[in-house]
Image (cartoon, rainbow, N blue to C red; front, side, top):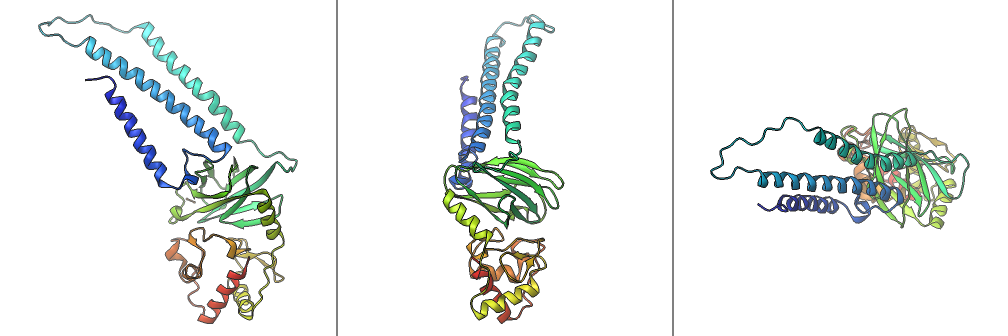
Length: 341
Ligand code: CUA
């Protein structure tokens, strides 16, 4: 038997696993190809531990096969080999070597963990932005305390800037995860966990809930939209003073339907009529979002599906169905929502 074979197989298994994992998502959502500083620092730690594991495997297997061959029973030799009971040198060696390896792993891990968990500087600055990410069953709320914006399902960030994310939850434990940008962070009620994110290039990065939190855990998706600073500023301006007033008669009717049915939970900023519900996603600029409920492509057919039977789309959601609305009300409600830019 050759010494390299099992290691070769181990590599093959690792390689296939990596290939499989890489194939799961588009490149923008690949843990092994992070698109920001935080993800890269974390990947370095993963690589360091993998290299140490490979080194340990190579050394252990080499010794194993050497012993197997060197001390195997030879034909005609029936003598009992020398009996060894404990070896102080060996005992010390196999305590000291793992301790050294653990220290090599621990120093950068602890340093990176603490530096990434740092809170944002108190003084507001152009170099970074602050965001609060709040998990709810089964959607994400994003607040920008410095910009006075509340939104849901879509986290807009400027490319190249550090984004200090404070992660928490409103109900059960969730976990905030944008595989292409940074590792998972628990979202626990009553607690704030921190992770800085940054994106090197514009694009849409997939976000996931990474902690089993109920029937629609697997559907608790969100998106990080990284855009050029100028585009981000435009988005901020639009969000700070949105024009949410309906234009057509149909949209005006729709606004009334919304006020009667939806505003106890949902908010729309920029309306004269105060729609300030905060139990459900803030719907300001709804039509410019890529997804409905963070999940369905944003088009009329899917909006219809979601409004009629949300339970079918997201089991366990607190959003009630509105199939009881008559056809005219439903049509005008959709027209109003689709007018919100
Ligand atoms: Cu929220 Cu899983």
